[in-house]
Length: 332
Image 1 (tube, one colour):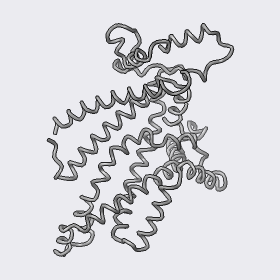
Image 2 (cartoon, rainbow, N blue to C red):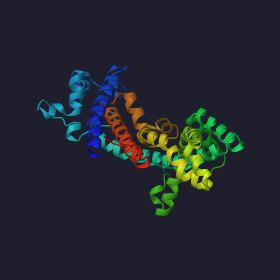
Image 3 (cartoon, rainbow, N blue to C red):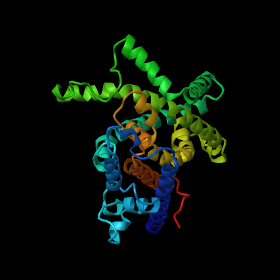
């Protein structure tokens, strides 16, 4: 197994390297100039040229990429540290290290999406199993209608609707954000409750959207599994319905969801980008959007790099977990 993991990590490193090249090319080909949004008409041309030189924007595109990667410093052609030296660079828009910007926001985004992922899996698997057992009956039809609504309703619209109901009219929830203005003055218990209140709307929105697809996948796979010969044999032996479902059928039916786990793990970083901007949640979504608008190269490239790394790690974890669940999977 360890040789398989090493091979996957080597392939993942190549994939991440290719992803950074693609993201850099797309960024360079997009309209506009880096830092154009921050240019003040009162700035002199000498100052603008000096800023471009400071951030390496006066150099050819290939040299800029190698500079961000840290290859130029590695060969002694530049003094600026890059990714290979453990530096994400400096943001032109925020005028501070990118690592500090990411560190201040990535925790909120991962916390939001981890809670969403946990709730989605805890709810989707039982609901999908229940819908399969009650095929064509009212629970199955109700869950099908609920899934249709979840897949068709835009997340940002649902978030605005919930804020309008529970914030504007009922005054039960805060109007977006991550914490209240007086959060630091609260006691520890009140601070935790404050965080939880701010997490209700985004978690509900993201869970409702993700639940629809996973629940339908679980239902379809469970229906297919329940028709297998070994399930019929287990029932003929007199095993209880719960043992047939949860010990024999679910173990095989859950395999497609485990495969999707790798993509969902990568989605922990970017899955809520649009929602974060709608509800003013201080996560990576807001940072990415503002950096993309300003063509802040260091921030955009670092965000793409982290997303690619999480995709590689998520897929590897899903493959290893699938081998633990399904003994038929081997690692050659």
